[in-house]
Length: 441
Ligand code: GAP
Image (tube, rainbow, N blue to C red; front, top):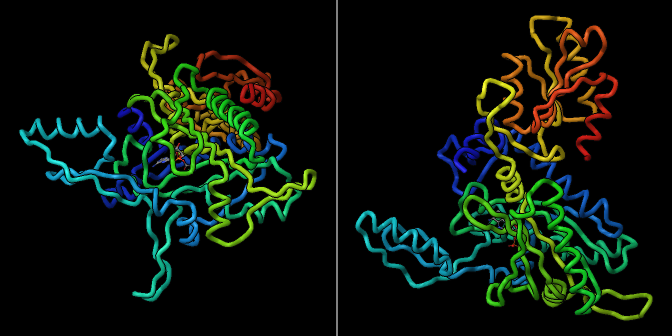
């Protein structure tokens, strides 16, 4: 993990938030490459969950919502964990985090200190925001604790402004905020993070809803596998009854085997009619659906897939990180980010073999400019070719193209593949097709 965190900072993937002021715990900033990686990941999610579905649409709701939303959703009441506090250093832990609590006690024991804990107290995880300009007259609301409610409060708006019929889904990607008690493990648990969610509205029918639930569970698991996470590094975990969130009828997590243990990546939740019926009750608005065919009126149930963008980004980075010896070179070891080409920040890098040969530079620039119309492309002319390859390996660029003297004779270039380090010559006119095929393989 330390090596990955250092690479992320050094190569511009992820920096600590507000770093020049000593940082702000639990916040992270994405640099040029991290931003690109996260963008690609969200695009892939949107493609699978919205574009490729027949009956799913997207929304982008406000982060700030009426505080009544959070009363209705149950968050002001239930989004609080019983916490205990170390009386020596005042660090707080969830009362059920037995492992962390034991570790903390051991740390103090090393300093010959015996920890005493406070009684468990409830703290609200919602981050408060004050609205208004006049001191003393400000209204308290919250930065959204989950992106979910922005979808549910718009259920009727979407229904009335579209031709959708149940079953249908509403997707959203956006920021959420939580006063996490123990942020940590790099971006794994942050105060500010992004979620990618689908709320899929169905008829209230126990058997049918479980069928739909299973479909989404598998669809989400496949998404991670198709983008390069090995099968044996992923598993499902069912929530025990006492662990279920206040809204959930059933909940399964997709977990990834990280260097810090099996950790939740995404939750698939059967929310029943919890959200719509609560919003109906608290807003006084009718949130029901009228089925034209059966003439039935009902409050739909919702199946939710709720993934973390930052968590998935982190898990793809962990999975991709590898160190290996370069058999083709002088035996030097190289660091490679074996990111799926669809996720890689740059799809290809273009180099002139020598930077002091204007004809090679001109030819390579032409290829670079042309490829930029369709792909994210990097340009590098520093140092020797081997070093340039290694620098691209470290940021996960799947292909490098070199323009050399042979290019000037027959309009072909060398393409070098990141994972196999194999090189082949292809025609300049075929580069675009070659890359498209490889990226979508
Ligand atoms: N709408 C349901 C919901 O929010 P959740 O299990 O609390 O469910 C869903 O969150 C996902 O959001 C998690 O699986 C995780 O990927 C991400 N997530 C939650 N809290 C997070 C945090 N503090 N930092 C980073 N990601 C977080």
